[in-house]
Amino acid sequence: MKKTRLALVLLMLSSQYVFAADAGSTAAATGVSATVLVDFMMSGAKPGPEADNRRALLQKDLAIQEVIIGEANKLQLVDQHNVQIRMEIARRQAIVAAYWVDFFRRNPIQESTLKDAYTKLVNANGNRQYHLSHIVVADDAAAQKAIDELKRGKKPFATVAKSVSEDKQTGGNGGDLGWHWKTEILPVVAEKLDAAKPGDLIGPLQTGKSAVSIIKLEASRDQQMPEFEKLKPAIEKSIRQQMEQQELARLSKQLGG
Image 1 (cartoon, rainbow, N blue to C red):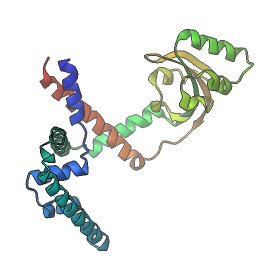
Image 2: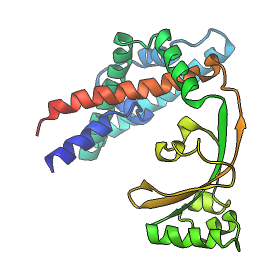
Image 3: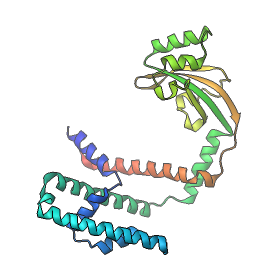
Image 4: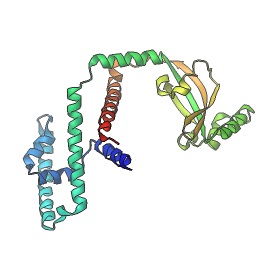
């Protein structure tokens, strides 16, 4: 129970979002002026009429918040338990968000790291994409029944997918998964693509705790990987997520038993 509770707390603290109303309440409670709040929210904005209008709207909104907070104080709403909890959550989230900003300031992702990741991506994918469809069922028995029906040739793959696939999102579309690079495909499937030809069935394969999949290679095609600059934002996001997970794993060790 202790581990579960601590894990939930850690997950909650990993969020970087703060509700505006809670942030305003917390700011008022700590004595931060409306002018400071506006300056903070406008930081980085380019001077001009649009910024001036936005600043005026922010000042008006904060002024209204101050009136509401004043009335809430008179009614002693701020002292209510649930309000205190929400304010504490907002405080923690703001601190955690600041931690991540500082973490990446101290651990910047170098351009060379991004380019190395891009090179590995290119090498892993080559210049080939694959068009796949799948049927997802609960167990091997159901998978074998679907395969037998497909091999008898009486119904096309799309028809069987629509009738038996438990993936309702793709099942209604005949199991169509569209075109993908090899690195976008589950490794257990991707490793079998080189030996497959269009029309081949792959599986059944265990693709989840309670999911067995039958994959059909619809087609493959030569396709040039996008240039580095186009993929750079996605690569950086992926690396940031990996770094965050590593840091959370390190911090989790401090939770103890």
